[in-house]
Image: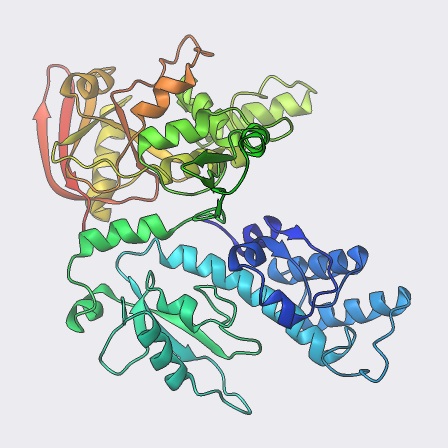
Length: 478
């Protein structure tokens, strides 16, 4: 899940003499990608503010310490407030300006990350605007809400008199002074959002089709490049060709419009389109992280498995002896996150066919222990640390994986909404096996993200000679 620091780290520093009034005229998508402060044109000062804000966002320091650090930096750097503006909002060292600069940026980072999390919660598809602390001079948010709702024709907005709207509703952008669909919605605002359950949304006629809403919410979990485009209809042919060459893999020029493609982002695409986005070569110096993670998964998915206790012991002993034999056996957490993005940005596989997964255990006690654990929990889920589980539509493939020992488990998922078919991506990766003992992932494989729970409906036990076979029927809840 994206964190507040992800929001800050993707921004580019833009030192500028522009005041807030002039920055307001800059396109929203440019402002969201830039780290700037009104009338701060000194790069060193801007970077110091950024470092301090990141420290607050990560929890390293508090807001008061952050303000003190900035005062000390500004004093040491010889900063002087504009004549006659000492102690006002125009003075970078004033408490008023420091609070606005630091608090607003930290709140935006948290608001962006929280929205991404909310968009993944289908059981709470709406938000309610509320005041989280009193204000000396409260703004009239009720009237502001009413005006914003009218401006978007009440799209996704409740009409029950409360300030409730779907997380995907355009009202959140219309409500914001900054044009962003997440808090803060204005400087010094004491307003935030809290989740509203699906049940309540249905009761107030805000949701009619939960399945369609799920797809809408998944599509809205976009990266910074979602929807970024430039009208290039008036550009000359030579300019268009040169731009297409320089931005190969990062953008596409089609029908007079230049659109960002976001090769290492989170924009959701159909698998076929995602295959194009990930496989296009990128300009020199830009690593294709998601493509490489996908390639490594296909060639040896076991490298993405969590470390076992035995592997940790072996790695520790090798390290003590100065050996490096464990290097390369497991991928880094960064590569796991890159693979997770690949999976989550592929549109869900829609099919009424059952999915199957074969497992096996080394002994009867291990088999029964796992089944007892599943019965107690009531659901099956990928073990902690796994990015995804492999499933298949083929009974034969599932049976093959289950039959490696006499102690077998076959999972059958009768209803699924989160599975991904990455076959179109596999065809462009052109993998080569790096581990002869591990078969390449195949185009018949379907992946279910590791955070998805499949609730158990029926367990059938069958004695074999020798061994035992357990068949578990499960399904993903709506």
